Amino acid sequence: MMHKVTLIPGDGIGPEITEVAQECVEVTGVKIDWEIACAGKAAIKEYGTPLPESTIDSIKKNKVAWKGPITTPIGEGFRSVNVALRKELNLYTCLRPYKLYPGVRSRFSDVDIVVVRENTEDLYAGIEFELGDTDTKEFIEFIYRIKGEKIREDSAISIKPISISASRKIVKAAFEWALANNRKKVTCIHKANIMKFTDGLFLASAREVAHSYEGKIEFDDRLVDNMCMQLVQKPQIYDVLVLPNLYGDIVSDLCAGLVGGLGVAPGANIGDEYAVFEPTHGSAPRYQGMNKVNPAGMILSAVMMLQYLGERKAAGRLEIALAKVIKEGKKVTYDLKPSPDDPTAAGTREMGEAVIEELLK
Ligand code: NAD
Image (cartoon, rainbow, N blue to C red; front, side, top):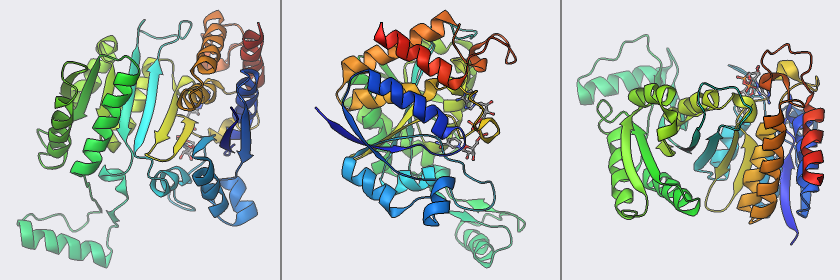
């Protein structure tokens, strides 16, 4: 069967990891008709916007996209294309598996955690009040009027909306993923002891959804601070984690650190209609064009995409081929070597080609 997929190479290191990872996917034999679309810096030059309508239309038509990272300038220029895509396509689930592959240096030996992060609300909803704005002053007065709480006048404010509907949806997504992938336990992460209304609602929704999976998947919950400590002490006892947006973002990077860093971490943003697969890491602009960075995150995001497309066998072959290259430790990039300046480190292309060689054996 021929699949149609929108391919967005991104910017920074995006195009170089995408190129070699795409060759890996093609060697699996899965037939994909790629529709190349532009986003980020490259799109600004050609379309005057970092996220052209034609790119969104392409994803809406094909339903599945695979993308490289895209730079988000800090404090100026365009807002995050990644956030805009998630909003535009209602990609409410961010799914990130953190699996420790043999050969990767880590303090642990058996980490296999999946982070399921809510993608659309919480402090990342983007409702912010800037220091000194008239709106901000009015809002501070309004809070004082209705709550009797005095917020300092020299404050900026962000709003944290958490809804029952989005919380139920993300927890259900976590349980469904756990069921479909033979996992045993879902842990809800929150700070409901302090944020009783917002995180309290997230936890209550999680408990309610968990009832319908009783006897099939275990459920428990942890405070986010305690969870961070436990993850660096005994990550092997955790399975699937479900979190609101902000904690999900932070705990994701913590988990990436447990399994060898950002270079080997893939991700997927999934909604009811569309799915966008990408590595967890960003565009690492200082390494752009150097043939230096690890293509594994991009390759593993293709593994997730192939699973989503129903190509489980090809996905398994691609993952095993990459795992062999990592385990052997010869043709791997600098981040997987004992020291980052190891002269035997392979380039992005060489590591990708080693995966292709494994696939062809
Ligand atoms: P980054 O992930 O780009 O890089 C941080 C560091 O991680 C790098 O300096 C490098 O040491 C390491 N690293 C990242 N990818 C690697 C790889 N494939 N192989 C080996 N090492 C790797 O994070 P940043 O520097 O904070 O962000 C750079 C830009 O990327 C920012 O504009 C940010 O907004 C954007 N970003 C985009 C996405 C996305 O497109 N989904 C995600 C995160 C960050």
